[in-house]
Amino acid sequence: MQEIKFRAWLKIEHRWADVDELLGHLPVKYFYKPQAVLRFGNGNRMYDINLFSGLKDKKGKEIYEKDIVNYGADPSVVVFENGCFWSRAGQYELYIHRDIEVIGNIYENPELLR
Image (tube, rainbow, N blue to C red; front, side, top):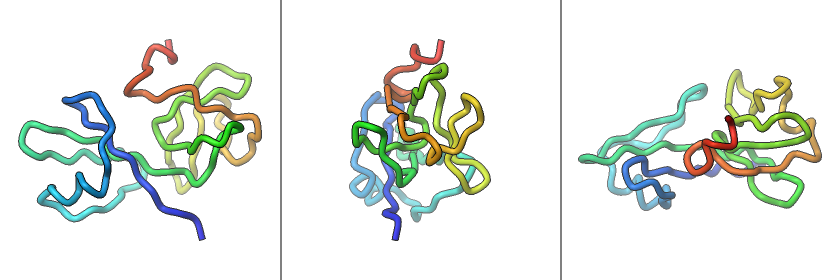
């Protein structure tokens, strides 16, 4: 069975937070809506929740949506769409590529996409 994991980016504070701890303080129940990054508000904070793809890159790093990956083409963002995790460069499903490498994410490394 595939492990279901999430990570949370605190938009205002520009840092990662523990999802379990974060959700314990939110006035909403946790759910995941495909094709969208969830945004939860708690006072002045905003959070982006990213879903784990169930895959690891060639160095063993977990691949989440909104990661920036590289596998010989231009760097591209991982998205969850139509029930699959995709990398926009070439429109390939991630599991096809054995040499894929996570080089960053859209929050901490947006310059990698320029």
